[in-house]
Amino acid sequence: MRKMIKALIFDLDGTLVDSETLHYRAWEKALLQNGVPSFSFEEFLRFIGTSNEKVAVEHIESHNIPKSVAELVLEKQTIYMELLPEIELCPGVKEMLNRFHEKMKMAVASSSHKKEIMAILDMNNLLGYFSFIIGGDMVQKKKPDPEIYLRTQSFLQLHPDECVAFEDSVHGLNAAKNAGMYGVAIPNMFTKNNNFDRADGIVASFKEVDEKYLSALVLS
Image (cartoon, rainbow, N blue to C red; front, top):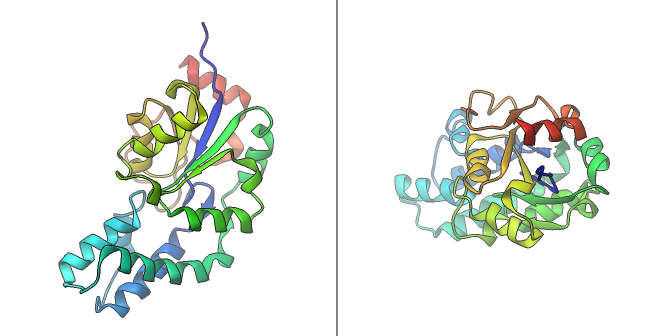
């Protein structure tokens, strides 16, 4: 029997919305307030596709910050939430969601905390497109571990090979592939040099993704 794609699952930061520079600005300010004199954008790039907790752990250990991971993440998150009105959608997002929202299930699986995801989607009138939203604070293991995708697939009540995940980073792509899903990379200026060898497809924007494209994925 021919395989069919029944669900599309999206990363958020760098995939649906152009938010990575805002995450960087929030971390730079939060770390400076805690005695870290310099946090370059090049250093931040190492953390794209991972989690706030990973940034916090490394800097608490390297700079002896006398706070818990949760406390430092909350400080950064408070700064970040104030920047949310500056966020813009990535190219082709609204058209992509409109193209498929009555044809397939759609979900968001992001390393960001759920309250950030909900605020961003609500602000951009995107909440109604998704049947399930899971944040990094809802799983124990972060990308590239497949936990977040396995939980999403379970909620959608589908097999992994009935799902396509869209990710901008190698960590996210590997999480989807480790869960047994199809993975499409959609690199941006910050992740264009990631190794996407495991990707089932690579696109420049969502404008390239239509029914014909998804059909070709399962035949390749």
